[in-house]
Every structure is written in structure tokens, then in C-alpha cells.
Length: 490
Image 1: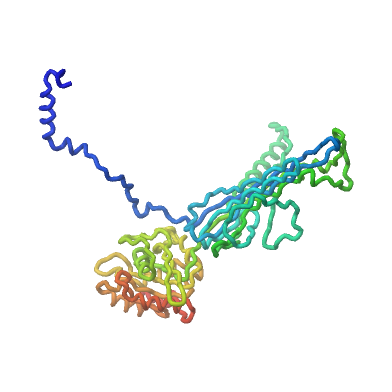
Image 2: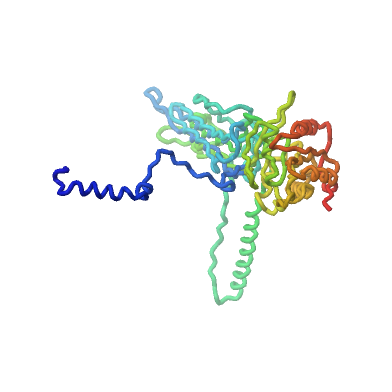
């Protein structure tokens, strides 16, 4: 190849000339390092999904079979159609492996039951749809039948040889309200009238009808906007606890179950076969549809102690000092976007501590992250108000600790009246800062009737005394709470 070129050394000289410039090889560099996805900003991370609307429908029942068996010795035939299978149920199961409701779908359908077949073959039962939800899930009913509590147990494979029972239960359990009848909306048809533009009476009638229709439409819109919700109909607080939210439909009856003649029933003869009119009733042979329900699922964390404070007050650091939890810690506001749980273990008892996102003044007006996450401390026995002692010192931004405490109590009352009236204590964090000890003394003078603990969560100073104080309050030996009357702000 080199012999065919007229001047083979000319190409080598050109390559050597341009290789001396440093910018050519810098622009075409290669690396074996794997590509790393850029880290999201703190407020762009996925938040905890603790509220979700759910539409559930049980599986429809299978249809019954209408068939006859004929043989050489029995030419008239005999009924051998099997019953349809029962539809599957939609079941919510409490599981400790689920953190929030993000994996829950909005629409959940159970499997349909199998149709009956000849030779007295019964349709298969539809598979149940088991949905795992976290511990502390609360159910609110918007529309549909009331959920039914079933026996506690974990999800197991369905027995394929389970024969469905199509006979109605004469004594249903009191806790279960099944209604497989779906409401059917009927539209009223009005007779058409001929409109006469030259008749004043007809003009007045139509004007009055248009006005009345407009009022009725506005009323129906306002009624549709206001949904009737039944709150706190059920709670899932124990692992393995189950609740049926949508029941499967019952299977239709085959003609083998309708061979006995009924009273006052007329008989027919088709193809030399006698059967009764009631046997051909579609309502008996067709399977019933599964029940439907619309629910609102709300997650409320189960904890003994709730840490409440303003953003960047050191709540996550304090949780890590109290327990072995490792929450995300950062030197900026709203580091915590989802509640964190930690276990505070003693010799004879274990206490669960919940760290919630920061709460600012005006959170009830949807400022900051709002106050919807306060549902996670509704079940706590003790509240621990974490205040920042270094706020406002040396020209730093922030308000004094006593004003922080007042704002926190007000926001709790805005969310739920009486929420701040449970046993509580005050934790003065960042006591190692310069001038923080004098601020803590002033806080103790301004706030009365509550126990206070100065701590430094980073250095774990005063954490032992705080653990003892939490244990005493959780056990109920000492009563201590924060009230607005006991806070002197002026």
C-alpha cells in the first residue's frame, strides 16, 4: 500500500505537524469510568406518599352452565350443567416491609370466577388480589360497601381445588356488610313537546323550565363536589392483619341445581325435554358482579415520641444520637422530606421515636412543606419540641427559642385542636454554641410548667438525661406539657 502512494512520507510529516498542537488530543479523550447519574437537589427528591385514593372491584362470578347429558338408555336427557365459580376478593394486608403507599395502584381488580361446564364441572374460583400496605394505614370510605375484617394471616397461595360455595349464608357475620348489587342509574325520559314561537303561554313555560334546569344543574354540581366520606372505618396496625375492601361476586347456578320443580311454575317442552320456565331465568344462571368501593388510604406512623421543631433545628441529628437510625443530615432547611423512625432501647422496654419534617410559622397556610405530615404524630404519646438555641446569635437568621416554641404550639392547634395538650418536653439543641447557655437560661425563665433538657446532638452531650426523661413521660409517671399561657414572649 505504501508503494502505491506517490509521496508516502508526506502524510507522516503532516500528522507530526498537527500532533504538536495540545488542543487536538484534549478534545477527544476517552475514559473507562462508568456514567454516574447527577444527584437531585434536596427539594427535587421523591417525597413520601402517605395518602392515596383507591378504586377496588371484586371479581365477577362465573356463569352457570345449561346443558343436558343424553345417552342410549336416557334419551330424554338429564341436567349436568355445573355452577359458576366465585369471583376473587380485593384484600389489604398489613406488612412491615412496606414503607409508604407509593407502590399502590389507583385501580385494583380481582380475578373473575370461571364458568361452569357440562358433566357437572364447577367453575374455578377467582384469585384474590392481595395488596400490601404499611403498618398504620387508616381507611376512609368514599363510596361502596363497608370493608370486612378477616382472620389475621399472611398471604399464601390459593388452593386450586377449593370448591366455591354458592349457597347463601343465612347468618352473615355482623362485621361484614356485603352488597354485590351495584347501583344502576336510571335516566328519566321526558316527552318531546312541540315548541311554538307564537304562543306566549308556551314561551313562559319553557323559560321557567330553563331556569329550573339551570338551578338543578348548579345544585347537582355542588352536591357532586361535596363527597360524603366516612372517616376512620378501619385501621391496620398489626403485621398480617387483613381487610377485605371488595367482595367477589357469587357464581351463577347451573341447571343441575334447578332440576327440582318449583311451585306455581309453568313447564315447557322443547325437543322432547321438560323443564320449567324458572330454570331459564338469566338472573339465576349468570354470575353476579363483584362489589365496588372507593377508599382513601392514609398512613399514620405508629410511634411513642414525636420530634417537632423548625427546619434545621437538629431533629435528624438528635434522632441519630438517640437511636441507631441514620437519617439524612444536611446544613440546610427542609433536609427531612419524609418521616424517619428510630428505636430507643432500654433494658426492659423499647420506645419508637419519629422525626418529621420541619414546621415553620404559617404552615397551615401551605407555607414551607405545609402541615399535612403532622398526621404521623397523631398517635404519639409524647411530644418533644426541639428548639435551636443558636438562632439569632451573632447575626444569624432566626427567632428566639421561646418564639419558636409558641409558633410550633400554634401550628399544632391549627392542624388538630388539642394535639399540643399531650405530655411533652422541650429540648434545647446546639448548647455548645457561644452564648447558647445564656439563651437556655432565658428560655427556662420564660417557659413554665414543662421539663427542659439542654443537649448537643452532634457531640451527644446531655443525651443520657434526655433518654431518661422520655422514658418517664412515656410510662406516665410524670405529667409535663406545653401551653400557650405558660410561654412568656414579651
